[in-house]
Image (tube, rainbow, N blue to C red; front, side):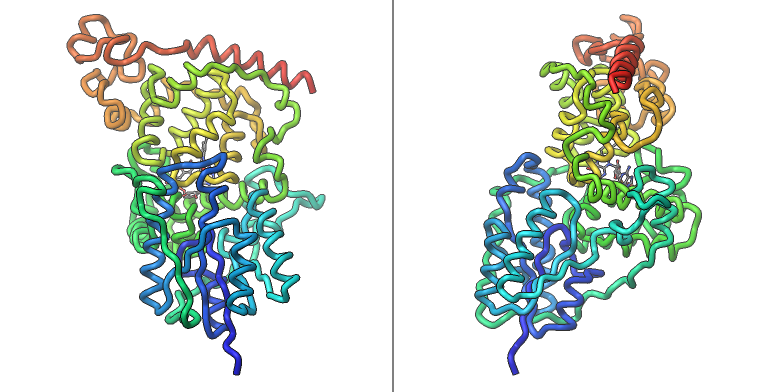
Length: 469
Ligand SMILES: Cc1cc2nc3c(=O)[nH]c(=O)nc-3n(C[C@H](O)[C@H](O)[C@H](O)COP(=O)(O)OP(=O)(O)OC[C@H]3O[C@@H](n4cnc5c(N)ncnc54)[C@H](O)[C@@H]3O)c2cc1C
């Protein structure tokens, strides 16, 4: 009898547990080729990121370990998948190529081409679930339209059927004599951040998920806004699929606490922004609300650099930006504050912020990054008016970092500044500055803008754009 061979084309689903494509290939074929294609268009493209590339490499090395333990090992090729995947399928005489579907315009265009070429060659091309909690392409409003508001989307998404969480395949076999290729050396892709928010790879992801579900998730409802903890920090693992969103959801549901329910709802935001990008692909580059395509943005490289480097003089903004650079991650509350600051205090284009986040975030990806940037820039699907999303960085700090631990951790120049002055260090008297070892303008910048003034500028610009509609 002929040996039947399947290729599982892995992209950002770098795991063996709860992997529908891998599980199906292992069930239905004699030999399974877990393939990863290093595509320079992604590694060096518009959203290139040395920290994320290094994290990816760590995920691939860990995946190779998981696959080897099951008898196979990762197969690595370099090039455009449109060339590599059909070529390898032909070379091996593969009957089927399977992958987990994705939503970005780039991924969908690429996958369409691969499918066309495979089908023309008589190879089955199977796109499987595995990236989101539910089938995010399905929900429609009563009038048959895609959702653009989270809460009604979430109510529909909750009701969608769920697939069962799949076990990891017990054993996998590669075709005999296959050259597995090799991962590039670590430094070729970039260095891992020494303070990275988490370690790459499925074993680290599963350990983090287990620890989160075992207790901290119960306090999520009350604590998710705590800047120094309180949220799961699972986003890089979800981004790279070293854990599946569906398994995360199921394990939180099984936990059954109120905190776990709040966490499941938050996880649905990820499905929501994927739904939005899938059905409104233009939001990857353009404002969802056409009237705001006329918004006036400034072009000021110095202000942009101050924001990027955490030198704005607003401690919470600077803390967030420095946490991002050091760890490849930023707490959601800080992301909202720095995003509001960029777009509504500095009047810089949200795409500049998106690009910087793509450069540094381990969890960055188009659906979530563009979706959230448009949310904070008030140009996206969020129904709240722009004036409700102009965050006051001083008040935000006082509310969400009440003991100053977050700011002191990430802006050490402010370590000795008294708590009463920590959100507005420029209000320290010269004597207080001396006592704190923090002279404003010397050790820590004076604020680069005046929030109270810029707030009005932003209101005027948004109002003008809205009226131009
Ligand atoms: C300007 C801006 C840019 C952002 N860019 C990204 C990005 O590129 N990638 C990304 O994954 N998230 C992004 N977010 C959303 C959010 O900040 C992160 O998902 C969250 O901080 C990750 O931390 P966590 O894992 O501890 O989240 P938790 O609070 O523990 O939430 C659990 C999971 O739910 C999902 N989730 C939570 N909040 C959101 C949200 N607002 N949107 C989408 N999914 C969410 C994430 O997958 C997260 O890991 C961005 C937010 C803002 C304001």
